[in-house]
Length: 438
Image (cartoon, rainbow, N blue to C red; front, side, top):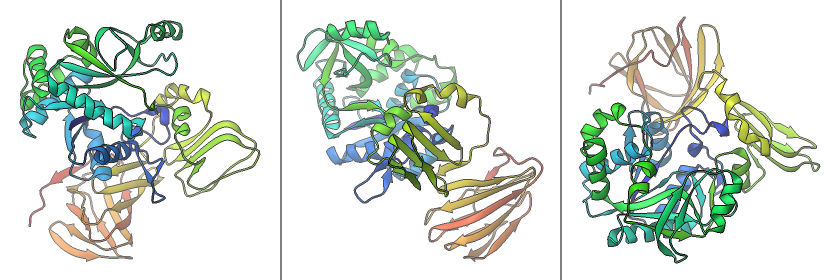
């Protein structure tokens, strides 16, 4: 299979674990067989590979998510980077052009597009294979997955099929309704539109040429900011006469709020937490190195991270976004392609960070104009380069770099260091990258 996973925005409804850099799909909250935890994107990637080990997976995403994707999935996954947000049709057109021009996938090959963050089981991915096969057959230009609804949701659009057969032509689409209207749709046999569909690659290339003026990857990338903001449903699906829908009746959940996410947790607590016997339907996710104790609570979620602390009634937690949008603070934790960092202290003229580098990985060779830096190695071994001078480092070593000094560090083993930034105007934008000679 050729699969494009759409990796969307920040998922602020899962604050404080999600932010503008660390989107909800990267939160490690699902328990694995070995007792560890994996994220939504890791879970979906693993499930796809379980069903089809040879699947070619490309993630369509923004530049801010690229480092986290490499951190969690490695370098083997394809990434189609959107220069900015332009809705789903430009994103899918760009990803399709990437498959054709960069990955060299032929125009007759089927492509399956789906969100990166559904909570599903293996039967969902078996259905993706059926979608791919149906698209390849050429009976329709576009093949949708219609999800059999379990309640009259106001969050999804609806697909009205022409028959009750497992595969049917599509009669019409309906926009997101209110609950009462949704009941009427369901009574008429409507299916949820979960944004899952398949097509032969050349079909979307032709649509891109027709609607965007080009199907060339480099051209679309260069003009991306000027492309119209338009959804794939509106631009393509609703106007396509040769379209089919496949029914899917398995488990499918959108874990976009704390209320729905906690339903998928296998244990009531993650991290250091204690619940009294008087607690009922309480979940705690704790990323801080301090204990959380809950007593006498009912239907509550507690989440703690370097970004902040949430204590909320589960049903009301979906209304968090306006409150979080009003918060203005520095990013306190992020995963990068080379490892991760966590802010420990913010002072008027200083910033203290704990940096963890993965074995064999290195930061970019870079400098800062407005701040000095001090690295104190607390764990592991590595190699530091400062203005072209190379030296090994290990536990207890201290490296001082003045403003303007070019520097990088490479981890031999997992390397942890405390970085202290000193300056009057500390900013993530104060960074100049260079090629590392030798």
